[in-house]
Image 1 (cartoon, protein in one colour):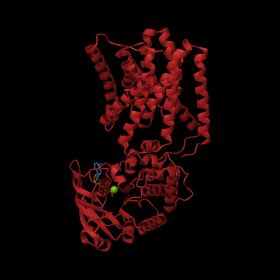
Image 2 (tube, chains in turn red, green):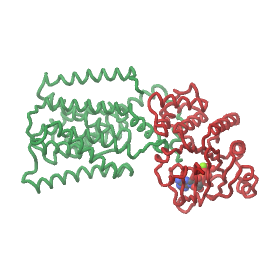
Image 3 (cartoon, rainbow over the protein chains, first blue to last red):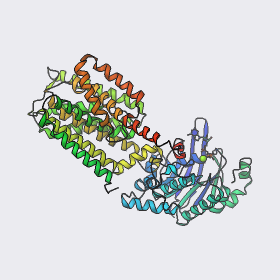
Image 4 (cartoon, rainbow over the protein chains, first blue to last red):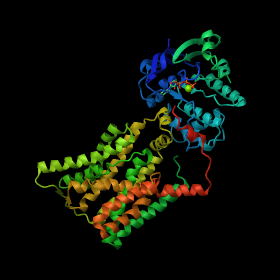
Length: 244
Length: 324
Ligand SMILES: Nc1ncnc2c1ncn2[C@@H]1O[C@H](COP(=O)(O)OP(=O)(O)OP(=O)(O)O)[C@@H](O)[C@H]1O
Ligand SMILES: [Mg+2]
């Protein structure tokens, strides 16, 4: 049996007195599209920060294909194959779309350079729907296009695990349909994806399994259908349902 | 990224013509103008080397005097034993080594500590060298006798300046330069792209320090007698910061815009009011920080942008300020 793409064992992170992630464990299989949901402030982004090395866990272990990565600096975790997007989109504002994506391509998994790097970046921009927009400065792009650029940059690293933090948030209904289709395409290409999302329709459509966090704790995991009909989960979301 | 653009070729041609013209200078004058030009070329090398590191990273280094002095002392100590080019290389290597140690110790912490640490370090090294000399020999200084005329020193310094520019230009075309551009945009994104930001800064500091060390080595024969207070003068550290900031550190050739007028004015001031020179330097420093924080070039670019009517602020620039 091969090791899961990602395993989280008893991860914990506190900020002063606030325990943002409290003894959370779950596993993501290779090629899985996995959901991470929960009300606002439940610790989802912090969990992604722990996986990607933006933050170091206080306790617990995170393994990538069986290899422990917790405690490594962020750039080493990135090189081992963890790429991410940010809840508030973070593009490189002084550059055009192509250079943004090349940032992932040049320093990520394949470490390409020159024309090869540029060609791969263009391929990815086409994949996320930005063909012909390569030379557009990202600062002049719309929010959804910036999100596309950011996604393409993450894909540029050719990651083993892709972490998406509310990548669908802030999209209008037609953009949302496009976004869901795009994530579905990425998943069908065999990528392992962990997506944090408030848009429940997207979770239902896309994910096979998910975990639910509430106040830093994992309150439920399993198949999406089971999880979303669980009374505890419904309770946690009561009055806090951002379902778009 | 491998092809030369028309703009780059034009700049290279202008640069080559300027260097050729500058190289001719000693043919026409061996006195005042040569001395002045040597100072200009010296500070062009120092300020551009300083900007290689401080431009992209925004760390203000006051360790220039330490690197410079180590270069000078490499020559002073070895001039009777080793050929001059070897000593220049050694001066660069020793300075790079020191830069690597300082970088590893301090570049992971905040910029304020870095400024203070580098200033203290330069002072500490000066004290150590003085102390060692007093312990080992009777005299404070060392004699540097060579056959070099001022014109020779000038040509070597000019060659070093060209080397600094060439290196800076190669960096901007390399992975290192691309990484620096990404770090300048968003350091956290850079890390999540797989860039070892700490190591990169150390490498850059070492390259910068090596050139400063070599400049100190090349200048050593100008003074036949080398002492710690002159070789490790903190004034050099401050002058380099002043001139580089005056010109602007966002472009490789930005410091030149500060170096040329400032060196000429300083030459004039130190001749006319030798006792008040430090005051003038201090006032110039204040004026630059308050009036021209982005340098002359930065100011010109701002004005040009304002003429073109300010564009609306980008959402990306705002988002980049938010935490993950
Ligand atoms: N760097 C930090 N310093 C202090 N507190 C933090 C930090 N990051 C997160 N927190 C706190 O930890 C808790 C969990 O935050 P987190 O951002 O992980 O939640 P989330 O589930 O992603 O919420 P949302 O759905 O709103 O994005 C919150 O109470 C937040 O205020
Ligand atoms: Mg969040």
